[in-house]
Image 1 (tube, one colour):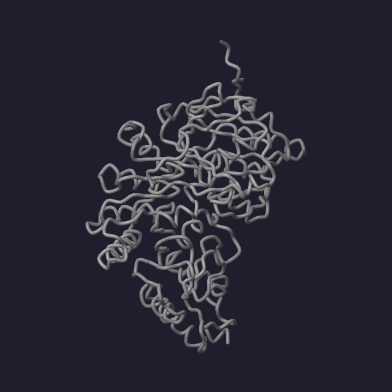
Image 2: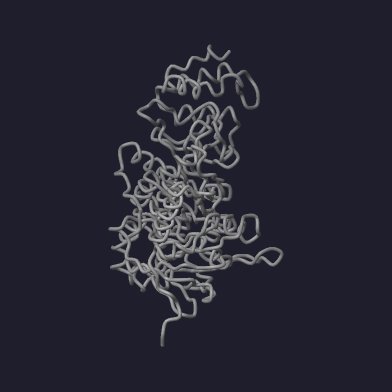
Length: 499
C-alpha cells in the first residue's frame, strides 16, 4: 500500500511557510527540537531579504532551543515575535537590539494561553519524531514541550523524522492535556512515577503536510566542568538539606527535587546525590540533565519525571544503549504537566533554581542584566518556586572576576519576590530566610552569602538607609549598578555620592 504522506526535503517543507506565518516548534531546550526545516526557513528568509522582500515568522517553543532554531532564525533576521524562553546568544542579541520582539512567559502557562486564544493560533507545527504511523500516532524524541497543543491548534503539521533517535523510545512519554475551565479536574499524579496519559502523541493525520527525514543529534551544549565555586555551592545545598532532614522538617525518606538547568544546577545535583546524609531520591522537574543520569546509574536517584532529556550526546547515547534499564526510571511529559503548580504543591517539591542577582531582602532577579537587557527568561523557575515545599536559590557571590556582586541593595528587576524565596545560597554560605523580618534577612544574607570585598559596602548601605520596616535609601539603592555602568565594576561604590 502506498504511503499517504509526502516525503520532501527540508527546503521543500520550508517552501510552504510564508511571511507572517506563526509556527510552533516541538522540543524543550535543544532536546526534541526540529533541526532541518528551521534552518531551511532561515535560508528562505535570507533569500527574500536579498530581493528586498519581507520575511519573518512568529515563534512558539517549549523553552529554549538549539542553534538550528533560535540561532538560525535570529541570524536571518526572520523573527516576527518570540516566546516564551530562549538562551541562544544570537537570539538574545536580536532581542536586546529590538530586532526580535520577545515576551517572557512562565513555561507552565504557554500551552493553555495558546488554547485560550490569548496568543495568535499557529499555522504550522513542526514536530520531531522517532516513529509514526498513518493513523497519526507520533512517538516524540527527547523532549515534549508544547507539542500536544501546537499539534491540536495548527492548520498543518510538518514532521521531522529523526533517525538519530531510536523507535524504541516509545513508552518513555506520558502525553496528557488537562481540560480547560470550567471542566478542569485535578491532574491525577500523586507521585513522580505515576503515568496518566498516552505513550504516543495522537494527531489528525489529515493535517500532516509532509515528512522530512533527518539523522541529526540534539544540540545540547557540554556542561562546564565543576569548579571550586560551583562545587562549594553544591556542597552548601546538600548540607542545608541534610540538616533539614536531621531537624525533622524534611521527612527522613526525603522529598522529590526540582532543579533548574545549567552548570550550577548540574554540579549541585552531583553534590546532593553523593551526600551520605541525603537518601536516594526522586525528581519531578522540567529538564533531566547529565548529573541525573549518572546518579541514576549509581542508584542515588530512583526516578526522574521531566519534560526533556537535556543531556549531552554521549550521555544520551548511554541512555539509548541501556533503554531497558531506564524504561521504568524516566518519564517525559508536556511542560503543562511537568511545570504545573498543582503538581509542585501536591508532591511537596524541594525546588532549586539559579539567581542572576538577589538583594539583601531576598528578592531575586532571574532574567535581566542591569534591569534592562534580557538574559534568557524566567523559564520554569516561577512555576516551581512559589508553590514549593522549600524554595532555594543559588548564585555565585560575584561575577565578571569579582567586578559584580550578585547580592545588591535592590535587584534591578524582580522575578521572584521575598515572599517566595525561602533560602539563598552562595559559595560562602546559607541564608535561611524563613521566619525573618526584612532587617533580619539583610543581616543574614550579608553575613552568610556576600563576598568579603562587598560585605562592608552593603553594611554601609544599611547604615544610610534609616530605620523602617524595610530600610532602603531610594537615592542610593541602585548605586552599585550605577557604579558598574560608569566604571565596569561595583567595587569602589561610595554612598556619599548618592546622598
